[in-house]
Length: 254
Figure 1 (tube, helix red, strand yellow):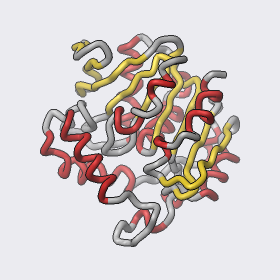
Figure 2 (tube, one colour):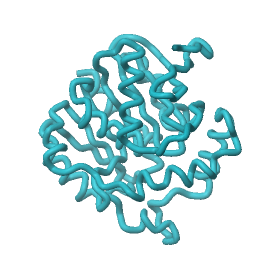
Figure 3 (tube, helix red, strand yellow):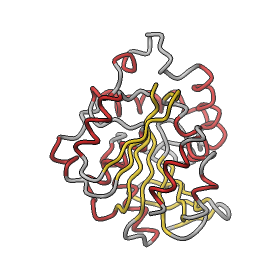
Figure 4 (cartoon, helix red, strand yellow):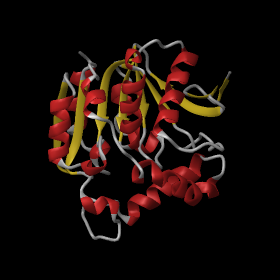
């Protein structure tokens, strides 16, 4: 069932979840998966118009994020990936390119592992694949590090959530629920990553949460992968950098 909210936004009921999505442009489908505690607009707002020139860009808001209300279900990567596949079924999409940032990159990777026949090309931005993929200070926010989000970053997240969420006051409670997704993350074994045969683009900042050595190791595991490192770029800045589109668009445009 779809309830249209405007020319671009709609809801689909998938796996007991009333999932929000937006459709921009036409041509080949490209599913956009936002970062943790973010929205489609806050993650992809700067690049979405350019991506929609050559794609049917479908921005999805995952369980509990943005317009999509939380439900009484754990926040787990396998559930989130299956939700995206159910939305693809709902939209009649057998396959699509997938572009995931941070949490969205984890969901995109899980989707490629669980449903390899549904993915054409894979862009994984600011994404790690094992717990040790992050710099140690990322797991201890009490440390002072230029890699960590600023107070302004957190304020922007909360403002974006409050502007569109069904329950604007649920942000702190949902933040607590979402933290184990990364805190308890165990990653994928070598064999599962080696089985990802779809063309894959890894993008990280040189001051990202993600260690450069980790990204290089994953580059060697995924058979058809390439890596782009954005200079002078933190985790939170990856989707804001002018250098991103010249890297991503040629990869997606074949």
